[in-house]
Length: 134
Image 1 (cartoon, rainbow, N blue to C red):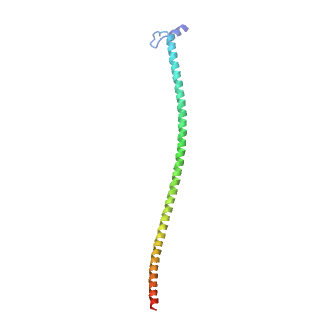
Image 2 (image 1 turned 45 degrees about the vertical axis):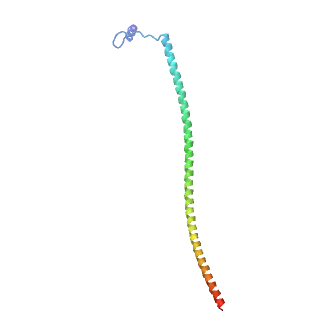
Image 3 (image 1 turned 135 degrees about the horizontal axis):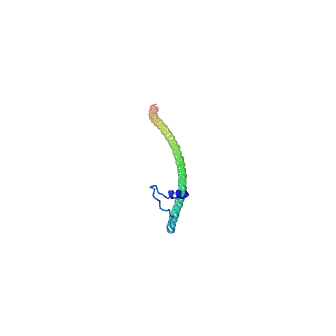
């Protein structure tokens, strides 16, 4: 019965006897072993490259995070400077308005002073004439 089972297992699907399975020859085995070693070496290289790529990616990610933090700090400083600039512009406008008011007042005072001097000189001339007449 075991003999029948062995014969049955050697038959192909079509029912014909299958060829005996033979292993690779020594040269084929060496060739396959060389291919396997080459594939193993390639896998090691790929693994090493992957490790280096991951390390590079981690480093770049850290640099990006630092860059983003720096950018955020600069953005915050820019916003603070913009607020200071706006405040300084408002103060400058107030100072200009105050200066304009002071200039207008000064011009008004100068005009009144000139008018007063003219009136005073006229009055002095009138008094001088009056003194001469007396």
